[in-house]
Length: 282
Image (cartoon, rainbow, N blue to C red; front, side, top):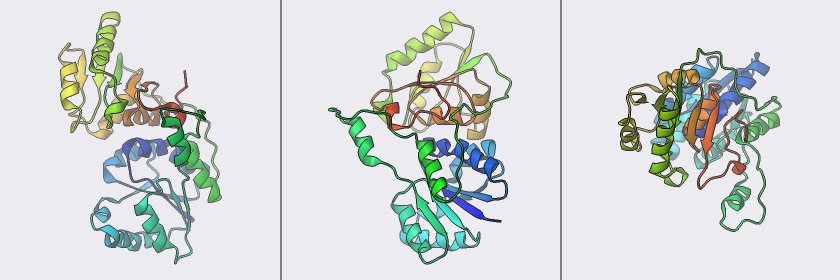
């Protein structure tokens, strides 16, 4: 059986984008063994969406620089990997690729198209157009490994029982992606006044806890999700009617489980290719 290793170490949103890609790989090639190298914190995404994929934790190997990456190389050799799809293409994966150059393993890295992305995000733009979607770039890596897949960019099938609630992720890792606080408050007020829905607030407890807890004080129908594990959050998101997010990881988590998203873009643009999988542009 041919063994395929897919690498995507961070960040959560970029890792979540890979979920529908891995689903399609596993569906298209049931005779292949699919491995994913990523951080253990992201395991629940794939335990939920891709139970047939074997997960390998990278965490401990990132602590000791080049020596740690060599230890990782030694560990990976036990899996007798035939092909490696590098969805990350950063210094760490390039060092790991250097070790693999002395083996028969075939390695292909993603083309991040950095120059075109920089052009889109400049204040003065001369060539504005839709860039390749990130999940399509992931698929290109697999195609170069003779593993073509068909990504239709349709929302992932979601058969969960829906509850009378929506999700709202009012923040993101980068401040320039965020609405002003008054917009968050106005949106919540509008939903409360014009529906009987509950609102579940999602976000990073390390950086967004105060923001979210303040928003939750306005009504008992507004609830935080800090007490939930990532796996429990994914179960909840799958049952929601819609999720409203900034350009953030929560957009991609919702997309991974097939929940419609309304995304808000501030300093970033969906033209760069990060719109959630299956989410329509309108």
